[in-house]
Amino acid sequence: MGQLPVDERNKIRKSCIMVDYSKWDNIEISDDEDDTHPNIDTASLFRWRHQARLQRMEEAKSEKDEYRQQREKCEANLRATETKIYQLEQTKEKDTTELNHYKTRLSELLEEINQLEEKRKELERKEIKTPWNVDTLSREGFKKTIINKPNQEQEGSTEQLSDEDKSKLWEDFISKHQVKLEKFADMEANWDSTKGYLTENPVLLCEEAANFLALLCIDLELEEDKEKLHKVAFHTVTMHFILELAKQLKTNPRATVEAFFKRIQKADKQYLDAFFDELRSFKDRVKDRAQARIKKAEEEERQKRLGPGGLDPAEIFESMPTELQECFESKDIPKLQAVLSAMPKEEAEDWLNKAIASGLWIPNADEGRDDIGNHGTPNTSDQ
Image 1 (spheres, one colour):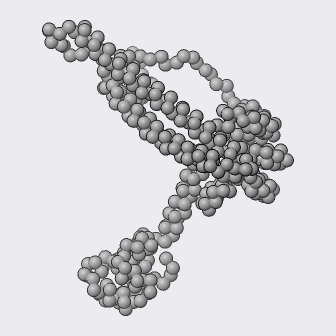
Image 2 (cartoon, helix red, strand yellow):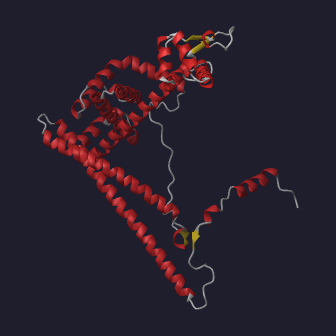
Image 3 (tube, helix red, strand yellow):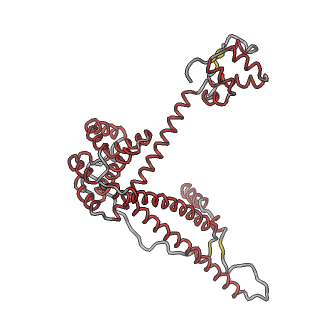
C-alpha cells in the first residue's frame, strides 16, 4: 500500500487535534442513568425526571420571555419620551413644567434599562450553568439557506484607496470646505435648517464631511461644550442616516436628502426612534473616544516626565512627606540636608534614590554619597 502524503497526514492530524470533546462533559440525560433500586420503577423514574426537566426549561423560557417583553416596553417608552422632549424643546413657547416631567421620566427609564441589563446578565449566567440534555442537544440548525451576492461598489467609493491617498483626499476636502462645515456646525439642531443647508451645499454630503463633524464632537466633549456638542452630534447623525440610505439604495446621497427629511418631518415614529437611539449611542461613543484621548495624552506626558531611572517625578513628589516636598518646591538645599539627616538612614537613602531615578535630584558624578549635601542639587527645571 502506498504511503500517505505528508500534507494529507498533517491535515488529518490537525483535524483530530482541533476536536474539543469537553463540551459533552456536562450533559443531563434521564434515560441513561446509573442502575436504580430494584423496588423502583425505572421507567417511571426516568419519565418523572424528564417531566421535571421540561418544567425547568419552560420556567427558564418564561423568564426570558418576561425579560424580553419588559425590555421592549421600556425601550419603546424611552424612545417615545426622548421624542416628546425633543418636540417640546423645538416649540417657541416651552412648557417648563411638562418638559421637566418628561426629563424626570427619562431618568427613571434609563435606570430601569440598567436594571434590566443586570437581569439579562443573570439569565445568561443561569443558562451557561444549565446542563445540556436530550431536548436541547437536537435542535433545528437552519430553516433556509441564503447566498449573498457581492455588494456593488458605490460610485466615488474610497474603500480601495490607500491610507495615504485617503489622507490626501481628506486634507484637500477640508481645505476647500472648512468654512461651510464650521457654519453648519454652528447651526441650530432642527430639521428645517439642516435640510435647507444640505440642499444648498450638497458637496457636504460625503464621508469626509461626516468625519470632520465627528472629530469636532470629540473636541467639544473635551472642552465640555455640551450645548454645541448636541448641535454638531445632531447634524453628524443626520449625515450618517442620509449616507446610509444612499448606500442601501445604491444612489448618490444628494438624491436621498428629500426622502430622509420627508420621513422625519412626517414624524414616522419608527424612524424617529431609530434616529434618537443612534444620537444617544453616538454621544456615548464620542465620550468614550474623548476619554481615550485624555488617557493617551496623559500617558504621553507621563513618558516625557520620566527621570533617568524610569520613575515619574510627579508621582514621586506626590508620595513624599510634606517637609520633603517643601524642600524641593523652595529648592532649599540646607533645609533638604536637615530633613534627610533627621530621617533614619535607610529611609533617607530610599527617598534620595527615588529622587535621583525620577530626575528630582541631579547627582554630581565626581562626588561621593557619604555627605548628602555634597551629593548634588535639586532639579531646578519645571516638573
